[in-house]
Image (cartoon, rainbow, N blue to C red; front, side):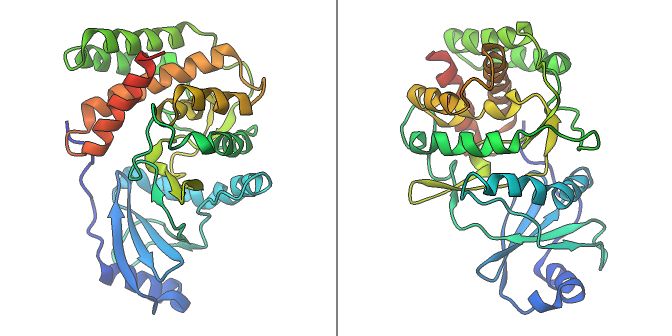
Length: 304
């Protein structure tokens, strides 16, 4: 199955320049070039220090609005404990020139994704910043207000996801050797059997993985793409450790939280990592890096 959904609008340099000229004229003369596109957004480099982030499909349009409303508050908590940067919107763009949705100008954080850098579980490349990432996540994980964004697939009890994940695990069984599949299937079942998150809904990044972490000179320098920011079970964010760190790195990551999260919370996180890997395995035919990441997470779980 293909990974990336098709764009529903045409976004080119002329459109981005026109939006800037109308709504942020002080920036409209800066050099502009396309930096890439993900599932949800088209990203453009604006000068040396800025980026323009535009939804490429209707389903992702509300996600930009969530960043515009909430990310400054979250970033302030992170800044109190870490120098890791978050891309807080600097300009809140409006529809115009036939483009139908909100868009943002954000700081450009210099670095490459941990995915592109080859950082993966089983090696030690990311272990040096396991504690730093834990401190960032702990700062994000504050109790969320009642009007925090709701995401139907992230932060919810894992049992809610079981009807969707069960057929995916069945499909994955035909693609994996017996032992690794048994390990991820058991991790998922252990997560379903674990007690649910007992506390109030916490703020979550919602989509933490190596493609949304920026590194430079061997250090973590940015956490990006808060479009899926939501509230709920912190296990969804803790699961990233199986995609990044060696066994020793995962221990250091967990230790940084002290006793904040229970064995049940970590069991749900491991199961969430298993579900993430299975979904990537089935949906990344057109993205070798994410297909490789799926196998990395599966191998990390199977090795425990």
